[in-house]
Image (cartoon, rainbow, N blue to C red; front, side, top):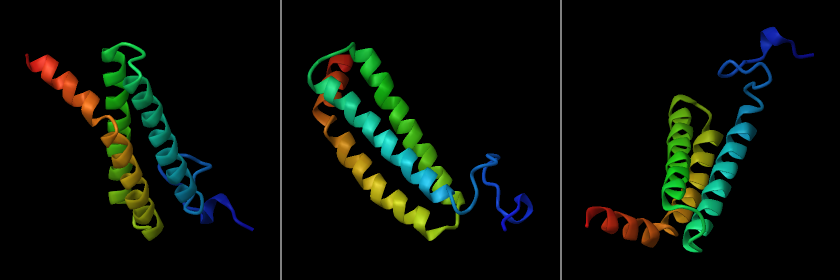
Amino acid sequence: LKTKDNQDVSYGFPTLCSSTITSWYRVLHEENTRSLNKTIKQALKARGSVDTILQEIQKSVDAFVSLIGMCKSHEKVSMHAMAVKHGGKFIDTFLKAFNFLERQFKQHND
């Protein structure tokens, strides 16, 4: 029987322990990438305001940076592997928006 005393409670969440943190971490990466992909599809189809799209992309990037920061402070090899795997997927998704972002930066600088 596991009790609260012998489980690692991670990051102040009572239901998040050392055995569930990797699943939680994976789902956060997947949801963040899915959200970014949806935002980029809106941007490429020119739906929604540019400011809103840029803010949503910024939120996804900030979430990604936070997730990678968590990985740096955690010792589980499986979390590091997930960060590499999902980090690559995130970067691939982000690069789909490169032309859109480049146009916006050029317009801003002009």
